[in-house]
Image (cartoon, rainbow, N blue to C red):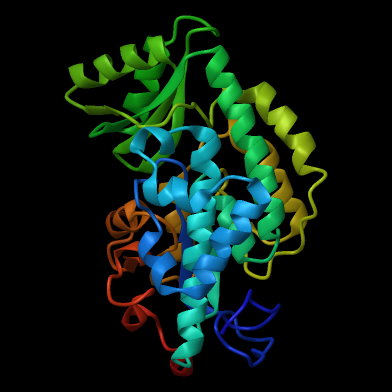
Length: 344
């Protein structure tokens, strides 16, 4: 049975790695809010002892029956931010632990070169890199969800995918749809070159969606009840920053790619600074993937519910291999796609 990675050791292995080894050409990538779906994590829960322990631990910490929420909750219940965020984080950590457990059973090991995470997924990546404990990440996420949910209760907001238009076109649409600081919409996520997510007040969001359709773009409102990654959340970001400053963060064992700058967050201070601005700063996922590719990554493994990130990677970095653990049916992790460390 494997446990959390020991510092300087490859995932799933009990032997120390040499100091000159940079890691396998692998990135573990973790999804964020919006990746949830009813029943998520149930298969991995049934097939992995480590996954079950992750759910039990998270439920004890959060005082939420996360197995029930994930396996029996409706799409409506899972869309509630206070449930969604700890549920996605827990499911991702359950997949991570199941992968490590299975690698140990078959005598395999990988040492990821970098970690990536989309928005909320950065916290899962920080757990995987041992920069923050699972317990602390859950407590932080509960506060993050509270801040975002409370904001939405006071001010109706939402998010929408805009597909088929460039960043410049969507930025212009957001400017045209924004009436005032109290009725605005902004780009929140640059997922791919012609796939962006906008976020803001519902009235401005709806105007922007109509403007996008008028330009022959596709506009789809997301099944989330929050806005995020825009200036709307400046006050919440400041409040969240005070929370993050009190959380123990260690030096990451594997660098995490910044959502904002796409640079490597390879120290505790850099990771903390990223979390402090996360709620108000856009996510540049397309550039994140390119940055990981520049680090020599050729295999991307999505660790968590769904396969949205893996699908995007296939389009952004077409020569890479991208696989989602949630797509596995016979194994908790598709072992065959992982590079063999012995071949380094």
